[in-house]
Length: 245
Image 1: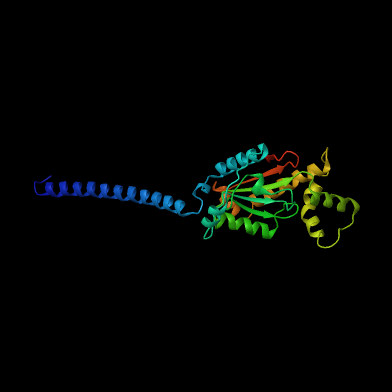
Image 2: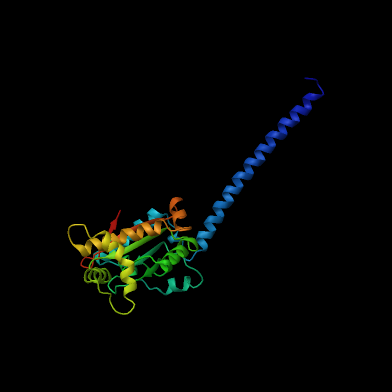
């Protein structure tokens, strides 16, 4: 290498090292900036403690139900929460539950305002409107968990069993409920044991699968591990929620 070329090569090496250092600093700065932005976004939410992973959200539901069962539910003054939630919401879980008056998710899971995004219909089934509501919770509100919550001695499922057995449609608009619940009743009809209990459990399982596979939002979020969809059964006599695998 000639003497004239040597300074040029040394300068090139220095420039390359300087460029590499600048690139690394820029990458670190971008990463830190993103983390700071994420932290600021979480703090800007009305309930920062509700920013949870799917597993942490499920754990929180289980812990809340345990407090409810033991009779040590919190008795908070909800006025501060009400004020904080005027402009936005970020619930940590979405619940598809039966409309039965004895099944109140906010009480069952000892939750406050803005914690649960609840959709209720007799028989806790996912029709188009319910799926759309769950999509809104996941896509717009970043809710990481959906629980399909059935309960024992469900009157809607029992009415469906009787209607199919007697081949007699119920009055009014109730046949729409029968149509939605009939697949679970038929699918569980060959099982041994309590026909009503079997159909209730089957209905929860069917709707968990339906929500997990709903396109385009819910199935994508589930595949990316951003969303967990689980089922549960509420026991009227004890208040406990048994999770279904």
